[in-house]
Image (cartoon, rainbow over all chains, first blue to last red; front, side, top):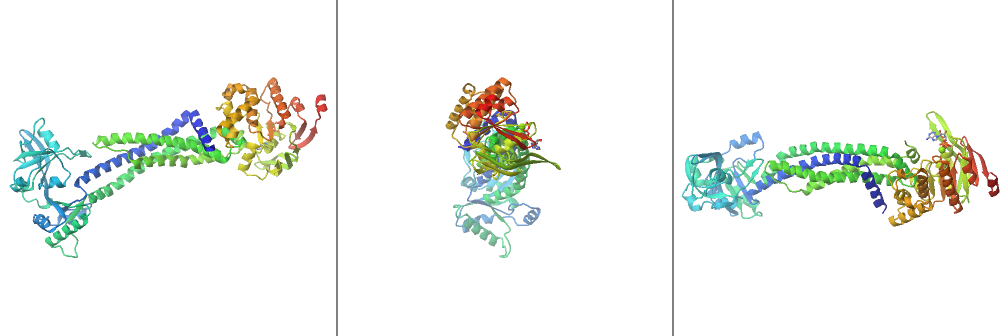
Length: 406
Length: 234
Ligand SMILES: Nc1ncnc2c1ncn2[C@@H]1O[C@H](COP(=O)(O)OP(=O)(O)OP(=O)(O)O)[C@@H](O)[C@H]1O
Ligand SMILES: [Mg+2]
């Protein structure tokens, strides 16, 4: 009851001092907006990265000689390793019960030509036909190449969205020929558009049968890897252990030595991205928090002025029976109302700005509950922390001195 | 049992190394229903005494009992309660909230004792009616004359039915005609049974009281009760 009345008093006071209220709001809005912009944009980027990594699927892993390299030593160590051998495919297929699909892969870059048009340095993937069932790539038009074609080393190609746009604008590409690194391939299908991350176009690729790839580029050596899909997420660990054992024995790794190859899951990749970007993220949030502290100091300053200006008002209230807590609550309400309103506006503005920023690198964000909760609690905290001192000062005023204040 | 009883009240202000005794061994006792005027030259300690009686300030030494309760040993919150319930204070400078309407200014004491909004409004309207300002309820102080402002302040002092009405030079900022109106209002309030203490410089006003306390250099110099007949002669 009483608290409602005090809230009413606080609202009236804020309304009566529009300029002061606006300035306080601005201080908070600037602080919260910058923090929210950064948090939302970072969340958006991380989300985009995650969704890209998730294209691999949760029950899929890759066997490579490289592993996730995060240091120079690790690189030089990996360079010395033997490549994954082609026989590994057959061995795994024969020996791993939980493996649903095993796909041999290798990647390279080559120019693609059609007539007089050339698309330079396109990513060329030599992959087995079961790739389409494992990876998160979908057929947009035509079809993926078949086992038959793969078996007979047919020179057929499944092209990415960008390749189609660049080389076949307005023309149906199915059945048409292109030249990959000078060799003729027939287009059998086009992939659905996948978009881009950080300006990195994910549609600029062409897939050809692994057999045809070997015919053109030779043994893949270091670039060779296996993509394996387990029957389910539940048996993923078990499957990875099986594959690890098969490879260790094939590569004659002594029992007391670590693997000289690596198994990578989507989770591994995500962890690495997170750890690499962590410092960057913490730094950005830290920098933007400074503006919040500045906002808080603005709030405190304006409130101090407000308390001094309203010394007589406080004296009058005390003379008719206002207790310390009533004055304290009134001034805290004023601080909280402004900072929370500012916080709310800041969250919305921050989201809009973050959306625009992230939009510039072709990504989207969705409102994050973390950002909203952080924004609200940060602004409320600012109001409490920076509002409490002026409010205490007001509450402690001596009634006689306050009344005779000029 | 007196309504107000002080024993040996001292108020000392320290100004650097110097001490100012604004009040010295003040012992007075005022009964319920009395109408008391406090007179004395400027700087003699009248306001200081009023502030002590009104629980806006605490004595340096001595005892003050209000309604048989020891006020001199109360903490801030208890004093705030007394100011809210027992005391109605009228100041020379009105001390109204400049941005609030008459109605809101009069409601103010009721807000701090948690009265519900509808009751607050009803009581404030009644108090404003008593000072004949029913037609100025939505006016702000800047939209009122000096006499009207002081009447709003009196309505605020009365709204909670306090035990005492204290007025420190209530007509000090008003012209003589308006002053007479205000003093008539005090007379009427006294007739209705209110206990009133007024600080004043003016003999005319003091004449209306039933008892005159003179104060000099912080000490009570005289305490004169005036009978009905005596007042007529004065
Ligand atoms: N806060 C204070 N600090 C120091 N001295 C004070 C303070 N308040 C009052 N005094 C001193 O106490 C004495 C009494 O002051 P008080 O205000 O009670 O006088 P008064 O009788 O009301 O005078 P006036 O008729 O001018 O209003 C004065 O000498 C004054 O200077
Ligand atoms: Mg005075």
